[in-house]
View 1 (cartoon, chains in turn brown, green):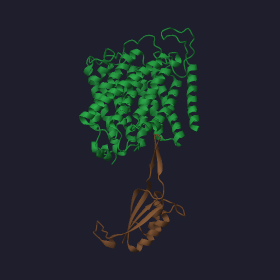
View 2 (cartoon, rainbow over the protein chains, first blue to last red; view 1 turned 90 degrees about the horizontal axis):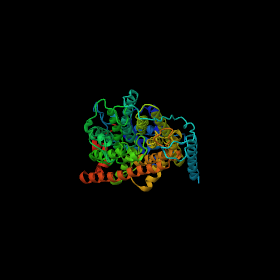
View 3 (tube, rainbow over the protein chains, first blue to last red; view 1 turned 60 degrees about the vertical axis):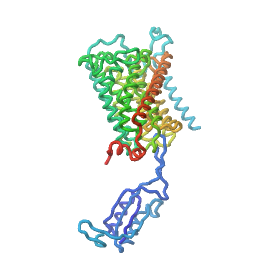
View 4 (cartoon, one colour; view 1 turned 30 degrees about the vertical axis):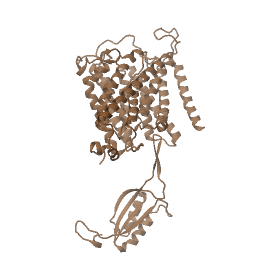
Length: 115
Length: 462
């Protein structure tokens, strides 16, 4: 079992969800995030004073997958999360972590069955 | 090079307005005020009616005046709560929003109570040596339900009391803008009590309560000196004694709230300025139109200045420019004509922007919400320009330099200087006393966590 954390552009969320549903991956957690990578931040001005805001809004997806779903999921996210055909700086990253155990709270199922 | 051209353009427009409005209005020979001019008087300046009552009105309750004053009073109350509370609260950091609101809220309550007990009496009661009023009207003693105000004998004194109360309350609340995000709530409460008593009431008495500045002929229609310069100087002194915040900077958390507050302030200010006419008639109407005109012009002037220096106009700039205009027109509202209002708007919009964007950084004091930058400087500009632009065709009681009375500017300077000097000294003493007895600031940890949590145990949004 693996745990995938994907940081993507907020504008690509719908496309990524669509692509994931095509490969039967429906269960995920989505949250707002801020981050900085190779994109530079932006500036805000209040009463003439400039503030450099180094963090940029991103969306974070967290998905637990059984091993056979790992590559299809990565492929689906990668294709859908690119802005434009070639992609741009700021499109994000995918992290793959080993997942030790999973439990379904309602039924107490554990392991692959519970994903 | 471009900057010089821009400033030249602004100055040029101002001078053009001056030339136009003075040319339009009466221009008497430099004779003393009391002497009648033999020059024919051309029609008064555009758009402003010219009441000039020959004798004082008969002492009889006028329901029109009274109805207006009741409404105006309620409008000015709205300016503090929630007008100023939201205006300030939205610009503050998210973790301090409620505390900022609390400062305005609690101050309104404290002043409301103290004013009817003794504040009104010492500010507007019978004069003692031109310095202060006596305590004859302690707890509204000797004011019956039907007693008419000696300041306007067509309205009940009780409504005049409350009207003035709302002015006192917002003055104290305005100063809080420089103290936010680091001041102990208990210290703020003590400050409110002491400052109202020892600064606001005396100054109000000098300018409005038949004190020595009034006798000297200082012109302050609705509170340029009493409210704005007063609050602004207190803000500056307090900010210096308090010291800078550990996390300085302006990071507005809710500009929607700020604009809501600004709108309420603008609306309420009609009560503030037009209500200061104390009558329902031409003078109130003149004050009303001047208020709207100067405010709109100032917002535009600030926006253009900001657009020029920063390439983008901001909504905070529109709101701030409007407030600067409201401040500057306050002493002038019932004295200038529309041309004068436009001039005041241009000058203050441009100047206050420069004050908050450039001068504050250079001088290095932490006046968090620009209470000094906008209210202090805006009030000084307005009070000074009143000395130039007061048009006797609008209000026979006021004649400025451009209308043949160069002495008025000197009187305005004396009034401004006296207020600034007295306010600075007494505010400093009050702050030092509070600092010695109970401390002024929260601890650095409390400051980092945010005063909403550390002073109130609350969250603005959850």
